[in-house]
Each structure stands twice: as C-alpha cells, then as structure tokens.
Image (cartoon, rainbow over all chains, first blue to last red; front, top):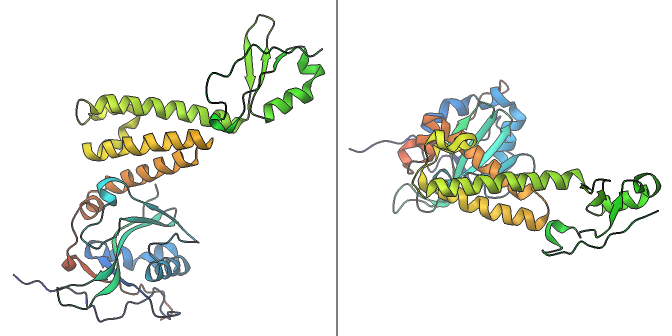
Length: 129
Length: 175
C-alpha cells in the first residue's frame, strides 16, 4: 500500500521565528512522533535558543556547535539509521532540552528523486538529565 | 636540618601521569624548617614525608589525586564488567552501581568496555581525566535517551521517509 508523506523535497525548510538570514544548506525534517515536541521548542527554550539550533543544523550539522554542547550517542543508538546517514548527534539546546539528529548529504525519497542534504530530527527530550 | 633519603628507585615509567617521582623524603621536623622545599616538591607532583614511626605520607596536587582515584574506580569497574560479560549479558542486580548500563544489549556493553579501556589508557597517559569523563558522559547520555520507550524505538529503528515531515516553524507570537 502506498503511503503519503507530508515531506515535500521541493518545499523550503523554515527557521524557527522566521526571517532566515540566508538560504539553509540542509533541509530540516522532524520525526512525526516528535512533531509536537518540535512545535513546543520555542515555548520551551526561547526563540534565540531555537534559532541557534536551527542555524547550526541547517548549516553545519556535522561540526561542533560554538554555542551549545554536542556529543555523539554511543552503541546502536549512535549508528546511522540507514545508508548515507551520519551517526546520531545529541544536541543540548538547554539543560532541559535535548535533540538527537542525523544528517544525510545526499538524501532522496526515491531512486530518481532530487538529491539534497537533509537533517532528520529523531527525538526531542524536554526532561532534564 | 633536611634529611634526604634516596632509597626510592623508580621501577615504573617515571613520566606516567606526567610527573617525575621525587626521590626526596622529608622528615616531619622538616615541615617547619623546610616548608618551601616541601611545597615545591608537592607542586612538582608529590612530596613525601616520613613520620617518626616510619610511616610514609605523600602530599600531591588534588587534581592528581582525583585522577588516580577515578582511574582506580573505573579500572575496577572495567574488570568487573569484563568478568560479567564472560557469562553473557549481566543482570541488573549483577551490575550494581553500573546498573545505568542496563538499557544496553550485550554488543553495546562490549563496545562500552572497549571505549572505557581506551579512555583509561588515554587519561593515564595524558595525566588528565577529561577524556575519561567525556567517554562516560557520552555513554550516560545515551543511556538516558534510551530510557524512554518512544525515544528508544526511534533511535534504534531504521530510517523510513514516511516517518518524517518538514520541520515547521514554531509560533513565536511575532509572525
């Protein structure tokens, strides 16, 4: 049975708070099970922190973030979820907001589809460790 | 009067932990009269003083003591975990204070053992526990993320494009 994804590879990604400073290199996807968490991100951490996360993952998700702590997840949780995907990065937005993501520099939803870099937000956690 | 005892022989790597072992042994009476030399020795890595009953004491930087204690603690944990893994995946009760590792399967636990081994060797060579702390923080963070069933299912699953959608712009009240 064919399924329909809400993800449109030709639709531009948007930055939390709007008014992007420049065209993002990476499109940003979020796992549907954490969509509600993502929609609460600004309310939970503030617009500036949410924008810093967005700026980081849309420009250089594989690099260390100068304004936030990032670390690799270990074991199977840190391994790529499929071919072309990076290892899992754990981004600490604040002490009580953490996001796990992977990125793919040549992502396509079909064999002959447009290839483009994407970041996939896997989980969002609002509980403090 | 400063009493020097050169009986100590370095039988191990003298550069271990980045410090040269002092071969000076002070007497308790030196603590008042030669405190500058005693403190210089302590700043240099360790200062040894012998009590009247022959017991030897050592003064060393607190950070170095922390490192030694941490290396001892995690070396012991490594040996215990290796022994447990020889019988398969340990039970929670067997893990004891390592029970935070219970969310990991046997393969992940073996990877943790390998990581911990490397981190212990590196921290000892560096004379700095930051590499060990970083290793443990990475694994503890992963354990906490896996503690939630939903996060666990996503993190351990395979990528399916239908599970994802464009990240929408959270409302900030200004747009």
